[in-house]
Amino acid sequence: MPNSSFISEFLLLPLADTRQLQLLHFWLLLGIYLAALLGNGLISTAVACDRRLHTPMYFFLLNLALLDLGCISTTLPKAMANALWDTRAISYAGCAAQLLFFAFFFSAEFSLLTIMSYDRYVAICKPLHYGTLMDSRACATMTAAAWGAGLLNSLLHTASTFSLPLCQGNVVNQFFCEVPQILKLSCSASYLREVVLLIFSISLVFGCFVFIVVSYVQIFMAVLRMPSEHGRHKAFSTCLPHLAVVSLFLSNGFFAYLKPPSFFSPTMDLMVAFLYSVVPPALNPLIYSMRNQEVKDAVRKLINKFVSKALNCPSFGIHGM
Image (cartoon, rainbow, N blue to C red; front, side):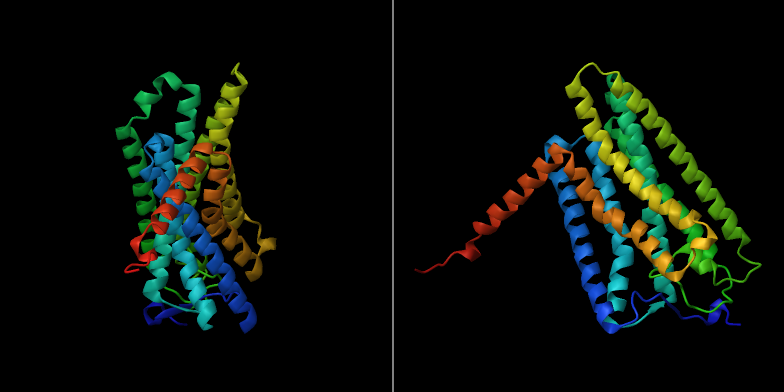
């Protein structure tokens, strides 16, 4: 049986069997990737440049956009390259790096979403203490903790996974490298350590999920007690986008990792992985901009400023006439 020391590359799951479908998938993924880059790039730039958005909620949104950019940039470029050049190969180091960065961005994003639910809880349930509990130092500390937790989690999983001997070949039944698929290639008696680590991570995720649910139960109870209809509408407009992002993130992630064995098939795994690794980073900017007028105004202002500068650029004029 082949050992991991002799594996120089892995073979990823192809997106299609025919050349025409591969090219179609390439253009589809390219469109999704460019849309995700544009949406998250506009939101992060608008939040950074507009002083009205220099608040804790939008500071967290800026970090969420950066994590979404990193998450989708970890998986899609390699999948597009494989579809374009009709190949399945990814180097051993490339696979390890892909697993490391995806686990980092994925876990850091969920940690940040948990912090964002706490931010909404304090803003709505304890508005008089918001300035104290969510000052700039507290926001920076919580955000650094989210990024640090993601980094620690990804380092532990990557080191544990790739320290295992791989005895089942080098074919990864997914379009990118992820922990469950690499574990399927390991020796049957040697992956218990990583399984324990996975159970620990799932327990932490479940704890964060319970925290989010409890936070939103209290938020909705507080909102329903508000006497002003305008106040209720404003509270819902800031909470519903975050709740929609959390629901999209968790539903796809839970189904991917906790689905029953009867649902197992390479095609199903491919679709589910696409849903939880590609769809949320691409849709999050749209979700946050649909019900948030401040984000809409900031993005519109940014676009108008860019178009105005482009039209007034000297290179567009004709000199010497």
